[in-house]
Length: 184
Image 1 (cartoon, rainbow, N blue to C red):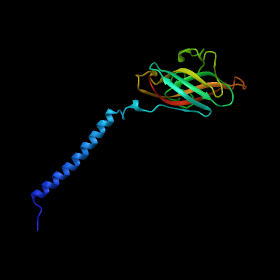
Image 2: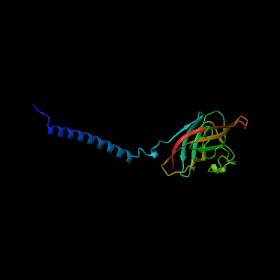
Image 3: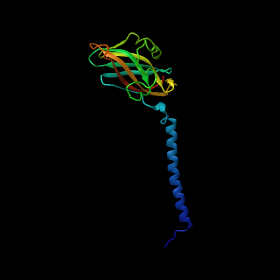
Image 4: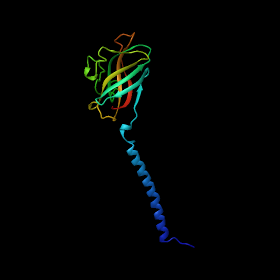
């Protein structure tokens, strides 16, 4: 008949330490590898573009100076005349306009500081099933949303437009796209 003495307790303690030590070492290595692969970095956020009904996002590019160039296709069945555009990281408290930047989604002549070029100066037509590029500055709580290459920005694109065949007084302001992009 054997009795467990000091040797048995020491062996149990060593077994315990070795098994937990191996587990802790494995977890530490896994965390190190994840950090090296930038798994926990915001730059690893996926690029996406989700559009409102009737629109499709063909491409988007976000420059380090805050310029969003987005290519939209619309399939509403009529020509849309873009009067104004805005890009911001959040909506206002009501949710119907941008919280920053061109908050009233004004046209180019009323707010040229919000457009990097004059593509919307005289209006911009979006024809059914044709891609149209829109260039607009994006804004966040600190002003113009500029960033380092590879860092991410999540925002929304608002469009102020009329439809061909309807009176010009019948304007719509909608969130045409929500997106996440990386500065390039």
